[in-house]
Image (cartoon, rainbow, N blue to C red; front, side, top):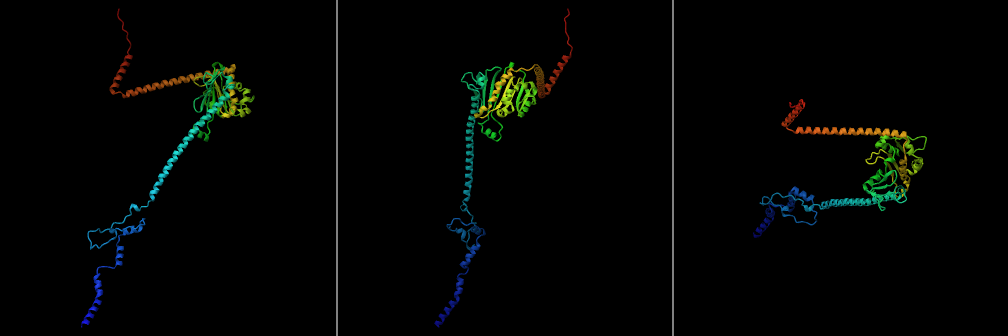
Length: 442
């Protein structure tokens, strides 16, 4: 009986064990199921951030308890219900932008150094060009003076005083600028003196040098002004220049425009080269001044091709428009380089030759009568122009005075105007009254 009871209890326990097991773990799920539920219950934003932005730091970090521990909402209270999304911090940012930001600073600094280097180089070139050009111009001026103004040269043989001073040690040249030099000579018959002005290229100026290289418009030039005595020059207006310059001179210079014309070449005698034109008041003057010696030395066709390359013009006039001297001889030549000054020897020799020729020259009676009539007519026209200018100046002053009085009256008050009109009316009435002379009865 006891055995039967024992067996019954044993089989009862075997049958009831699954039920007890289920009842002990009621309300709990398998661990795998819990993991799957945890993964599926994560917020969408957090999952996206965690998958799309991996941590660049390879070292593992401990997960935050508030981010990965979940609980049953029915069982726990007082804790936050929404989990904040995991946001990438500035530590996870790529450090490359800081490196790229440093690049523009380096380029700007290199650019600033480039500008400074360029400015410094330009300054150095400017200074070097200044002193080099200054030295070149001085060498050209000194070479000309050594060739024509020293002992036993052309000007030394034809003038008694050379230079700007009275002593023997006085300088021959007067420097008025880095490219302007002057030479003075006096002590010769028929003239008061001679002034030579050398105007050279602005070699000391870098901008002018560059411009002249691109567009060669200027060259080294020397001009001579000979101041003739009043009794040593007859009525002469005469010029020789190249064809293009002759037209411009005849149009622009008042004495040539009033008294002279451009002459056509004569057929009965030798004349100047085809590149030259003669402007003269009369054909007689032109024929007397263009001599055979001048044609053979400079102005002939063959001589001009060889020795006249530097000739620009010569202009003789007893009606020069200058403020000081009326009777002047003007010459202008192009200067060669310092080593070729001998090329202009024949051009410089024209100056003393024409001083003597003009000083001795006398017009014929017929030519003189024509020139005197022309000059008297020109003097009358000049007097009329002066009178017209004076009349215009007086009319202008009257108009200005009238305008000023009108402006003054406009500023006066009505009472002042009334008093002024009454005063003017009384003055007119008094002026219109007949004058009476009272005599005392005897």
